[in-house]
Length: 178
Image 1 (spheres, rainbow, N blue to C red):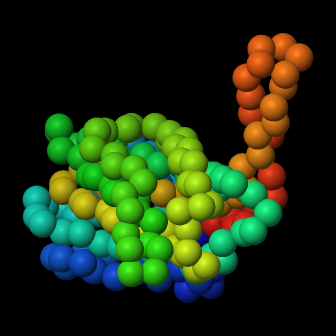
Image 2: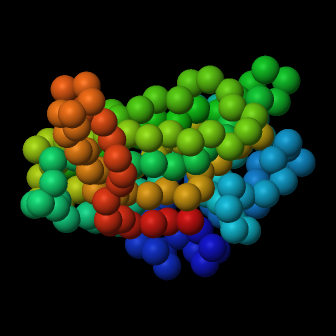
């Protein structure tokens, strides 16, 4: 998010309910414990200074389903520090045409940058798809996102050692959104 604008990289934001939306900031809100982004200078953040029923969506650019692999890996760093026991939540969804599938739900507090990895079977994808991050701020220091990457996931079979597979690396990146 180093351009300091979502639209530069094809991202869009919208308010689903309430009055707050995603914005670009540096670390956590309101003098929170994280003073900077995971990498670079800026991160995405959704924050509300009061309790409420706010939900804001951060929507990725449109991706085209790759034909040469079986699995994609979505990875990102997040933090949602608690403020006096209150913290913010996140739901990650796959937007696949008119279908939405929940990929992850973060409902506990993380005071440090934490990495999440999600495998997405390519067979589950339509030709065009997007990733949605639904932030639900509720009086914490904000829900923070940084270094969002979607890449081809490569697995190699190793029959010599254990007759099972092991991951040996990740393939080509389809998109990087720092």
